[in-house]
Structures are given as structure tokens and as C-alpha cells.
Length: 131
Image (cartoon, rainbow, N blue to C red; front, side, top):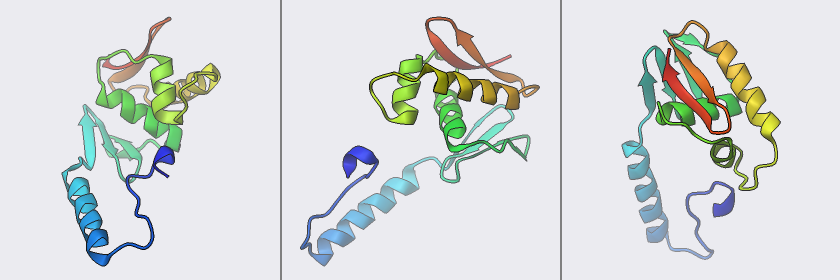
């Protein structure tokens, strides 16, 4: 099920050595992956899908966290709504502008007075930037 988020698969029957090798490779990859990122007062814990500002939990939904993480990882870059939709919602045909607009709106209200904002660039997209 690689198309719905899986990283790997094994066909049955499989040998124990192959299983061990795949698990070892997966664990090495996880150890190398960043566990959190910080941007100013923001700390985003990737595995837990939680965002904090100055130690206070923003209480984000999964989609809000995914959008904020994507924008924070690309700080200062303008990401199109289509790109965000594809990365967060997983669909390549962009047909729900309202979903992104509502998610961004909720995020912006939760980010007030943090020193960072999600800036809307009409007809171009969104960017995570310092105020």
C-alpha cells in the first residue's frame, strides 16, 4: 500500500533475514530523521504532530499541523494552494480551495502575537514568515 502512505512491504512468504534487514533499514532512517523543528518561538514535534509556541500547545488538528509543518519547513517560500493540497490532503487534482482557506484561517488565528504569520499572496499561495 505504498500509494496510501506505506514506506515498504513484504510479499508472503518471506524469510526472517529479509524482515530483519527491512526493519533495520527503517529504524536507521527514523534515527536520521529530525524529531522536531524550531522556528522562532515555534517548536513542531513531527512524530507527535504537536506544535508549541513558547511551550504552550497550539492544540492543532492533524491537517492544521501538517499545513503548518509544510509551511515552516519552507519558511519564506511561497507555496501554491495546489502544492499544499497535494502534500497535505494527498490528492493531485486541486478541487477544494475552501479546505485550505479554512485551515489557513484557523492557523492564522492561533498564531496571533507569535512574531510569525502565514502570509497570503493572492493568486500565488501562502508563506510562513516573520512579522
